[in-house]
Image (cartoon, rainbow, N blue to C red; front, side):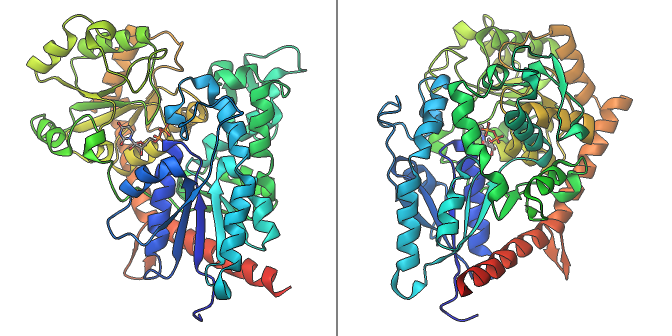
Length: 497
Ligand code: UDP
């Protein structure tokens, strides 16, 4: 390889914590590949830069480039450049729409990189978010290889993509069926209307959300590749095959799981890792239920109250990451006297049965601890991968987007969990939830034992996929090499014309 060959990889995540986190992990991994052979440029909007920098290891070689963004004219309050600071969930439509306006600025960044002295910064490839499929046009204009990186699993995303692109739950456009099969992904089985987000349920292709959102997904088939933060062997249920069909070629790469190199600054967490570990150390092995709804979700006030009662009735130890419920400022103060049963926090603290963590917990540290038995999760894909990498079974409570299909995948395809509730308006069945928590955490029962055995099997599968030692390369390592080689090849072909 000569000095002038392209080694710059441009990454461009959507402005949401759950998207930026896996992109940072990808950036870190790429910057370490082949003894720092590649340079990595991560593009994000100005206000996201400080958090991005905090999440990179000290002395990281990753180059962070700001892209100007303005939500003015789209109804986004000034200063909001991340979905986690959107004051209202319904502004998501406007936020997506505003994100489309990034195109000219993104084009300028790529154009500048391509025309930089002697072309040394010319991108080898652009890896963009699943919501930035439109970057394909910019990449093509400059002859650069373009891949979409999905921090999701193949099965969940295939269901999600199929539902949005076909809107088949709308039947003939007038009536809506309760349960449907996906016309281009029948392998997924039945999808029930309760497994659809509110946006999807009402979408008919002409409403504002679906018009904007489908535009974001439309260009996927034109991408040079789609990259998943998953493991090929886990995805036997044809989710990846679905995307291979859509693209019409085998350019779907499973390179996961990749994890963020740096935990969130302790200033912004509700508890230090040390305190968490100290508390977990005091609990017996495999006795703790960890509960979290991801980086930006919460449940309703009545669900929160019921979940607290379930936890008390279950008799299990637990760590619960709490945030103000739906309808309140999610970043505001958590008022336990209002949203939890009277005396709940004092009781669980006195008995050392539970730990309430405000807003943010060191999740990976918790999942890695031997005291943790199961994870009650919203089934966001990062959480799924983090849990399964430690062999921790998942009790699913999906809330939105493809989380519903991740939960289905975990229960029906992998057998590593059960679902206990769905969405923010579902009823929390007290008895049923206590029983299901017990079922998963009680490994003495046939079912509980089987779920744990399967979770451990998946952990092994994941370990093997990322292994790169003694001449053995796991499937994710090989997929990453193939992706970069394909980018190199395509880049050479395009630029020799
Ligand atoms: N996370 C964390 N502590 C929390 C909540 C979330 O560390 O209290 C991290 C978690 O480890 C994961 C990410 O935030 O890496 C959440 O991503 P996921 O895909 O699970 O859900 P999302 O937030 O995108 O809905």
